[in-house]
Amino acid sequence: MLDLRNIVNPFHINILCALFESVFCLLPCKLTPVTSARTLMSVPVRGGTVNAATGHLDRPGSIPATLFLAADVGGTYARVGLVQVSKDDGHQVELLAYRKLACADFPGLAELLQSFVASDVRTTVRHCVLACAGQLVGDEVLNDNSAWPIHLAQVRKAMALDEVAFLNDLEALGYALDDGSAQGTRRLCGPDIRPDGSILVIGPGTGLGAAVRWPGTSGGRVLTTEAGQMDYAPHSVREREVLAHLAPNGGYVAYERIVSGPGLLALYAVLCTLRGETPRLGTPEAVTAAASACSDAQAVEAVEIFCASLGSFTGSLAMAFVTVGSVYLAGGFLYSMFALLERSAFEERFLHGRSVRALLSRVPVWVTEHGRKGVLGAARWYLRRGVPGVARYASAAG
Image 1 (spheres, rainbow, N blue to C red):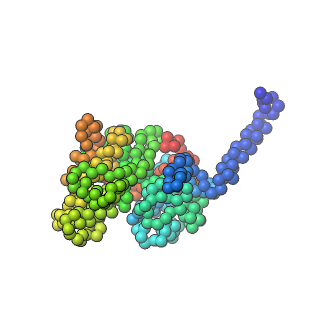
Image 2: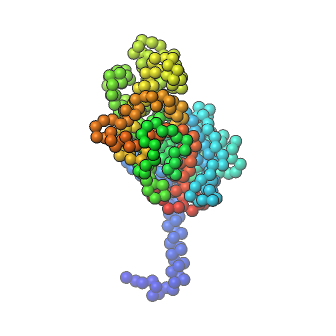
Image 3: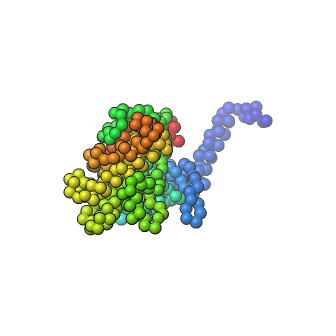
């Protein structure tokens, strides 16, 4: 083998290495001028399969920036923050501005973000990370509960951004638990401890999402799921009656149809129909308020079925992922009905039965308000992958 050191001096070798490095750094931009994805996987769709990007980045190049937008976009609300990397600790982020906006007030995501920039941002921001319910297929975020279609390229163009990064909203919540604390949480059941181990995050809201965080160096790794789309499994005769009404000819009914805000409202309407009554409550909040006041029998029963079904769903996932750390039930909707959850059949259904009961009884279940956690989790995820212009720090989040 030819040894260049015998014919070229070290100075020339350094020059050659620098040239090769420059060429290879430019190749990704030339080969993929619009998008770059961390991982590609085959996803079945009607009529075939497509490649779905996980941790997707939509960008023409990397322009240095220390400020960026982080948004946690749900079906009802979007929480948006202006973020910078902490000056004291390059591993952390700081929220310089934050706002919670109703999705229905805007014709699209780009307009919502533009409103935030116009009212709260005093400088040019060229980078954004989006945490959204659903999964990314190609350029589109697939989610039945989204307020509007979301295409990353359209958002980037409308906002004149250099980069738009994407992750699942429950995945972002998983990274928000990075510090292992339980600030802003209330214990629902289980021991009053915070054991080490895998953590399960479940978010019933406009839809139903779930993610799992496994511990590891530099914060561990979060796995996103679409567990909310699993088939609903009734446990009581009444639940079978509800399921039969939702699917009179049989077929698929997702947990999300029952264990979510709209699901609670649907439960209430079905129970009214089964009793031959006309529903008089029109929002999930009205149903929980009536259940708290015991002013509507159908509202009380709807909340009972909702909480019990949430317990079964949570326990099944805790068994599937062998959760030995904690379970976090996230969202303002659940947080507001904490008292109803406490006196419900949630714990009994969560514990299931037989030998697995001994395992699940060791797992604390916490209810946490959503708040800024999704924004902070998305920002932390983005920082771990290297914000353009900011040195990336080592992580096993991969």
